[in-house]
Length: 371
Ligand SMILES: [Zn+2]
Image (tube, rainbow, N blue to C red; front, side, top):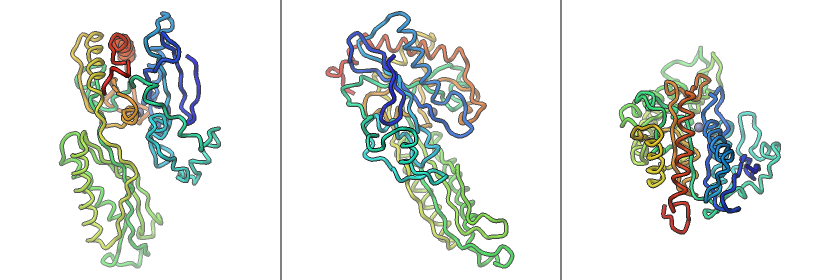
């Protein structure tokens, strides 16, 4: 492959097709991680793309389309309150960069880009035109227990769940832990604790694909002898459809407002991320499922992804499909994350089969393709 780093910092390898400059099948996932992460989340999908191209190159096999393997960054939103900035840049859905947003140390995104040799003013030039690509394929660990429970090495994703990420702030009144009577307190942390229990209850009482999580909590002033005056916490809500997610969100917002009213504290809920549900392309998904059946000898298992992936962003640019790999006990975002070698090999064979099958269809010819 010829390799380059694009204007958004993505690492891209290109393997030409039968004719140079042909539109590309994109195979990608992300190279960034959460803190204290595992080895496979994101990275495995990039490595599988590289392995597939290595195999084709070793055979001298060229396809009617080019293949580009993309290693995205900022999929997880670990450093800044953003996510999928670099795939959004590639998909052309990023209108402007939040350059003034800061990380935990107060460094702006602008400065971080500069420090890493990128020109913030040119970031959006990473965008592809739709006619440059034919489809997007992403392989990723499931990050859940469904495939392992079913005794399957791989599965085919039908859709990626709709997701909201909020920043919730509660303003109470700080006071002396020794002298402020209980009856007069406006304890922001106690209010947050009550809010979290309500969030968990509403999440648990919904359909199985609904999940609601508080994963970050900051307490101010944060001293053992001070009644907490201020808390902020994250709120993540996901479901297979926007309707389920939005109904749960409405219930949670009402519950939090009631808690704030009862306790006489101020509440603000700020939307930070709104990712709609993304259906994978039905024709590509059927093609991928057929490859799974040919390689494994079993009918493909279909599942919804509760986790967000670059594929959901790339769907704005081109038809997408996703292959999931079994991961041990569904553990992810954890150093214990583990994938079986034979499953990785199965995924490799499925991807190779899919690419060859896709090459025999007319679907990769943009003029004849309807998403
Ligand atoms: Zn991932």
